[in-house]
Image 1 (cartoon, rainbow, N blue to C red):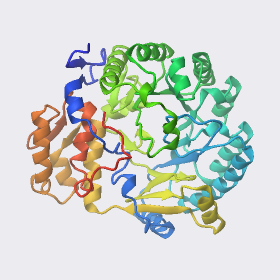
Image 2: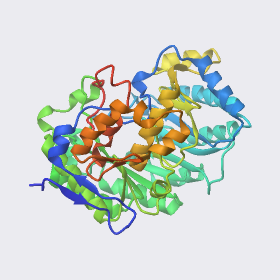
Image 3: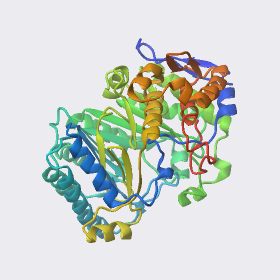
Image 4: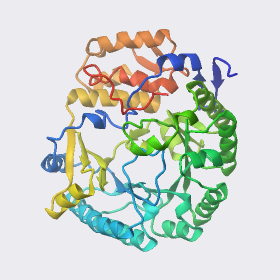
Length: 477
């Protein structure tokens, strides 16, 4: 049985803070809530925000004059097979002609975006997500990367962070080396779980040897960082199977590890309906798995970055957190807090200036907009002062686990205690549970509160005050 309160410190690094896993408290306070990759969250975007609103946002960036770095995200939606747990916007097909057509339209969008941002700044960050980005052939990827460099100015390889998500089942060692030559210097591998029974239950059979071969090839090719994605709460998982997987992951020694809580929402995501409810681990077992993973990753020297991310002490994420530069966006935690995010591809979400925007979610709508020589923006939101204020607070809590009241008052025209009187009253309730400490100058998330930081952020989410939390959101833990 798990002890009711396990203190976990990722020793031996002095700067790494402890995480206190209290299953009873988590069971009592856990609820559905946003992951706060944005604020306002994507479910609050409006259809009356469109292409012309996005142009106004870019114009405001130009008028601002200061050259902030750009972050680019490209969404490649295609997959060969469906993974039953997946909640991504993807298209499962064996028809490679669809990818060729998509690539042509994607290049059109990139050219339009590149023209808007020409002469403003360099791209310092690039991320390919999906779907499966390596669904594109090696030649198609090379062509796409060359087109990106014609459309945008990129920072040098030594300065920029250029990452791609890879399904180890789809790439050879030669392909990994080719990705490095094409300009990628960070690679993220989807693993989820090494247990064969779990893999069969989610329709993702992926031998450990394949994953280790890709990691070895990435190291040999000179990738600066290797990341592994894991999921706890999958069907057929238990504490022993997860312990075996985490031991194998630690032995592989990736630079970063993401440990996501599986959000079982079959009413929202059709592939999840193929997962048997009888195979799902109980809430108690999921908490045991989480506590065990945090404990063993900490003992192996990984720093708890926040929520679901871990990194080696010398990794850029850990360094950015120590230096107060950590940021959270639609790709998770990021080292580039000062970047405008330009996103291309079906369903992709960008953040330019004080706006968020999302592209069309279907290929037909995406293609139609580009055929009209317009960016396929179909929804979004322009942030007002209150949004910006609350976004700043949520970012600080999510990334630094603390908030300076005086810093907020210097940056925004508010008296914190007056403006947030109702929120502070709610926080005091969480303080009685030991999740947070409050005084006149600081709000600090405790070791006990770190796994429940989403609950604390929800206190400052004014949109949740007027409506119930959307059922599409996952449990906070």
